[in-house]
Length: 206
Ligand SMILES: Cc1cc2nc3c(=O)[nH]c(=O)nc-3n(C[C@H](O)[C@H](O)[C@H](O)COP(=O)(O)O)c2cc1C
Image (cartoon, rainbow, N blue to C red; front, side, top):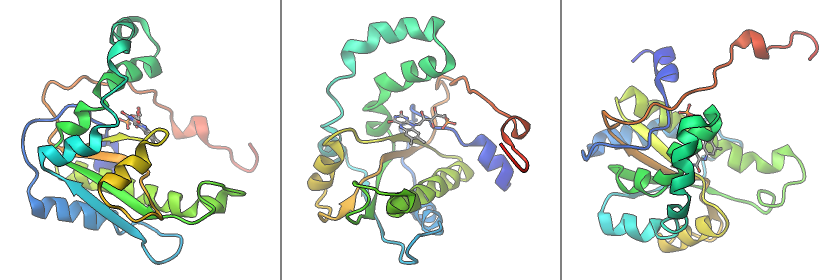
């Protein structure tokens, strides 16, 4: 797939077919992730891959709770909400299933330092910024392979709890979970808010 086509085609997908992604495709995607720029020239990244149902259930146990009560409100939002509210109405009830039903869950860990969780300036966040470059490469590579990704940011203690479950070392943090798989044919289309470059560019001064 041509690069611009891949970029425009990439979307977060939250419904997957029950098909398994072959190992060599998964490796290509992770290798593409690791071509990302890195703040320390070290590429301090590790990837825990979950494929078995039991392993997924164990890691996702911290998500399961909490989404059910909102379902009725979300159904109405799908009808009369703003594009952002509609996205939430699709996303919220799927926070567990979009990972559980993915062929693989990728947990991208980055080596942290004392500054990341207590930043004093933007560069304190460099380890976090670098892993997000990796994550976008993974999304694009998956798209180029005809696959798609879901993504969730761990909330509160969730990331630490997942890290403990998969034996990640203390100084490695989890920025997000990634679900990887073949997009379902009947997945809901999420209305996008599109901007043009002309609307956002400021030549010389803002
Ligand atoms: C920093 C960040 C956090 C996000 N957190 C979540 C999340 O917790 N759960 C989820 O389903 N999607 C999450 N998303 C995906 C966004 O909802 C999605 O990217 C956005 O709606 C735009 O849609 P698109 O990626 O399909 O273009 C997140 C995206 C980003 C960049």
